[in-house]
Every structure is written in C-alpha cells, then in structure tokens.
Length: 178
Image 1 (cartoon, rainbow, N blue to C red):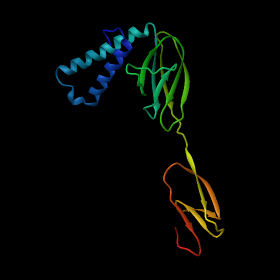
Image 2 (image 1 turned 45 degrees about the vertical axis):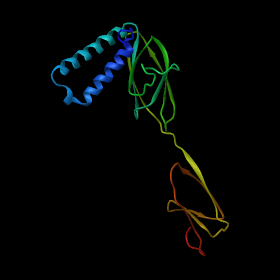
Image 3 (image 1 turned 90 degrees about the horizontal axis):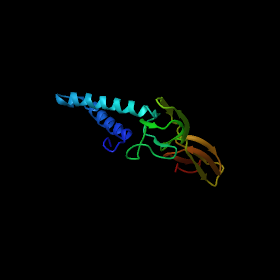
Image 4 (image 1 turned 90 degrees about the vertical axis):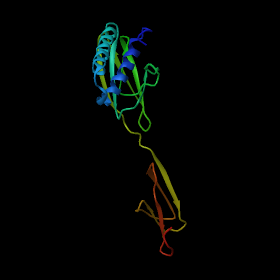
C-alpha cells in the first residue's frame, strides 16, 4: 500500500504487524527490536503526513468488534473494519454507523478538520429479545410453571419470556407433573 500511495492503508497494515508483535513480546529479539522501532516511526510519519489534509478518528466500542460504516462505506484496506479502528477522513461532517450482532445499530455524526483527531468510544446497547410461551391446559385447576416459577392457574396461560431455553411444567391435582 505504501508504494501505491495509500498511506492510510499502509498505517493499517503496519499497525496489524505491530499489534501481532506486541502480543508476542518474546519475539522481539535482536534485529526485530530495531525493526519494531522503525515501523513505529514510519507509522508516526505517515500519520503526520495524512493529518496535513485529513482528520483522524480513533473509534472504539464496548464491547469491541462492531462493524463500521463511514458515510455508507466500510473503511479499511480489506473492507472489513471492526472496532477498535483508526481511520483518516477528509475535513467535514461524517456519519459513523456501528453494527454488532445482539446490539442496537448506532449512528453518530463526527466533524473533523485537517489535523484534528477525535477519540470516539461508544457503549453499544444490547437488544433485548423475547418470545412468548402459551400453554393451553384445558383445566382451570392446572398450574403452569416456567423455570420453576409459578405463572398461575388456568386453562390458558400466556407470558413473554427472554430469549433462550426454558422449562415449562404443568401441575394438576389429579395428575403427575408433565
């Protein structure tokens, strides 16, 4: 990417290399210590170059791993950017859209000027999913239990329940539990 004059993608790949090395510090021996420092210096130089005409966004979410769209496009060299992620944008207002399985989609605006750097951390809100349990016993004396908790007596019992596995039990004075 560096030779194709794409400094933002170059920075992305250099950071991937640095992150891999940082996760395995025992590999930093001999010439690799110097190379590690050279790559860090190169990232800093490329960032300064980009910040002459663009702004930077350091984006994180809690939890990490949200898919990112910026103005409807996926940033990153491979088009698969997820948080945390740093990207460089032209000056102006941009829309960041974050999407993660099990969480609400979030959209926020971010305004940048040349040379600016915005750190954006977004707590994602979990989507509460639920279903319905509907039990028809046919007898008002039947008691319906869900996960060991009585839902009451009746011929027709219905209740909203959180997503997941549940145990339904029906008790009747004239029968063994089902």
